[in-house]
Length: 578
Ligand code: ATP
Ligand code: MG
Image (cartoon, rainbow, N blue to C red; front, side, top):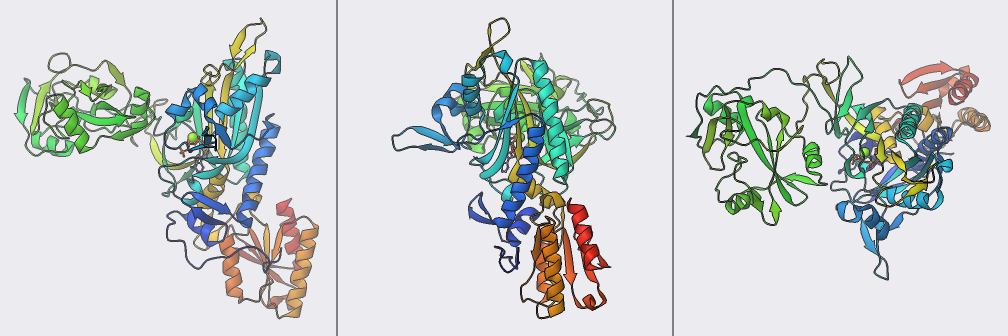
């Protein structure tokens, strides 16, 4: 490809709405153009990268025995009603109507469709196990599309679905996909960590996310991990053992005391001169539409996904001041946030108030707790006497760095990760409600035991930029670079330089190398800048030293510059690419 013909326009500045490196660089280097919020055009350079990632994914999935198909992007409501997700999936599901008023949605994922295909075709245990996958655009009307390709509304995903006859068979396929994912990301030049995770809206029990570890804002997930053993988990799923803390408030008797104008745990513990860990904090959440009170030790934080799962909801947020006021009024109290307690809260509109306690509060003694009266607290409380312990006790706690590893007891560390892939054991979550069954060896009908396995193709490309760049631009790993090498004659007016550059170019093309020849009549500085920004893994600069038979070979990864003959440069590229 001649640079003068390449469909690319590099920009001088980063786009103003770009917050993270990959978004900034992909936009500035001419890979992507925003069409509308969270929706991007993949321009020719980007499309080459995406196709390379797709082909690595295809290759490894095929090797692992999976078969590719392609399902429609638009899906009918009826199948989603069968699985129960039409009502359950929130605003992320982009719903639309056709001209006959039939309801449809844009596919955010394809469990319903694949399950309907399977139940029509896979009728006997003899046909199982099967793993089917596709690579396709997905649409999720994300609450906060941001970070360019990392969190788009339309994005490309590889999604695979397995159908097995037993848990053992599913375990085997899960491990098979685990191995394929490890190989895929390695080939893409990405180091990943597999971490335990929450199953979210897709459902199921066991699931792992493949994370690209990063210390930047682009890592939207906190990952807790142990250096001494293999424990690693997303914060929405991580558990830990706690160091010893003060759990006895030491109050000799229970009494209500004035605590004027103390609004936070910190202020309250200072006012009472007690440890935050002897305060039982009560937080009001709205899960889907219903009120939920979470009780947790004052020095700990609620992990919202854990709380949402404890209730079996799909959406969670902290209640507003107005909602808390209404809740209090309806139950005959008058208190603002900071003074809330679990006692006497029964109803909120048409909903019953749910109260769930985190495990940390069960061991508190003579503790401090709100009683739904502004400027007052109860001190010296105990479960079973002054306050009733809620029937539902769960792990709701957000793990913190320094807590002890649940596997080996060593202190946990925290880092950030970009989720590029996710594998789930679904079990019969879809096959049962959708009546997707086969006949077993005894002629009995059985639901398929399913698994599903996703990789964000476009997110993986962006994650590669997050992991491989410097201040000048992208440093693509060779396997997913849009082109392997950029050949830059310093002066297009210089006949010798042009002749040698052309010869190198032709020879590389003949050897199957993806080469670009920068034939533009531009200053060398401009060409080098573009070359670094676009991120060609190699550059061969043909300048004045060609009269001594030398060109400059630049390795983008290290920015190392080596003088060599054109033949050596050609050889070096061919060796690396093959
Ligand atoms: P997240 O938690 O980041 O919203 P998810 O867990 O909902 O993602 P999955 O349903 O597991 O996503 O989808 C499989 C893969 O698709 C993810 O691992 C990720 O790589 C990719 N993906 C999901 N949502 C997006 C998005 N909005 N933009 C780009 N890629 C995405
Ligand atoms: Mg996921």
